[in-house]
Image 1 (cartoon, rainbow, N blue to C red):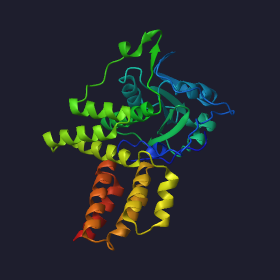
Image 2 (image 1 turned 60 degrees about the horizontal axis):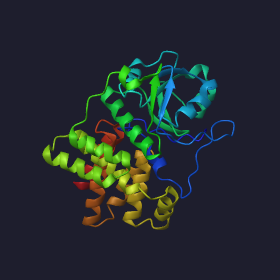
Image 3 (image 1 turned 180 degrees about the horizontal axis):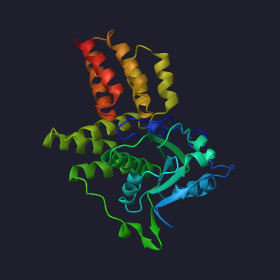
Image 4 (image 1 turned 45 degrees about the vertical axis):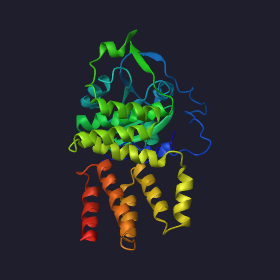
Length: 314
């Protein structure tokens, strides 16, 4: 539980995707105390509320709950972030929020490597997942949770919770429906069918080139598709063995972006750029532009990398 993935702070969607690049024989993470959490589930559980005041003593319960629905964990300094609670409730029982006072719960604070508040993480099937630090806008928060649900579904966690014996989605306001092609892409991602999701986003962009959500979604699912079926060890070994192999370097850059290490990915590809032929430069430029969409134009790391790329091009 102490091996928390690096934070994807400021990454659009912010979900650390490195757990998708699984070792060949993946085992479920064990909760504190050495016992394994239960198997992922798609059923229904009853909870007292969609927003739980939580702490060190509740860790085992959070791990078990995370086998049914993703548990969003918000670390604060005693004053919960109200905006995140309303967004979690709008998902109608597909998410639960655990609000943790980091100053009074050192075990959880250390386990999730919390350095500042608010910090938002998640637990899926007993596994910790870093999300982001600081407060973000509601639309960005929804995008984070949409990706979190897609990731959870791929790991067999697709249940719901009830509140006081009633379906949470009957008691809570529902989120706005997605445009049809976006919904098609989202459903495909939940099934792990990335090519279909890519096709849906491409069709949405063809219909409206200004659809920035589709552009960002296409960049994100393309990243997932490229990493699918590969292991982190294979990717890093191939890149180390062939430092001039562009395909290998692009793969490890994908891996770095998936883990929130944007600077590493940008530096790797920008360093390669000068020595490449025109075809190679075009491929690197295209990949960097995808990363810029994944992270968001406002990210300072994107601003710096975009300036460096422009200098190299002109």
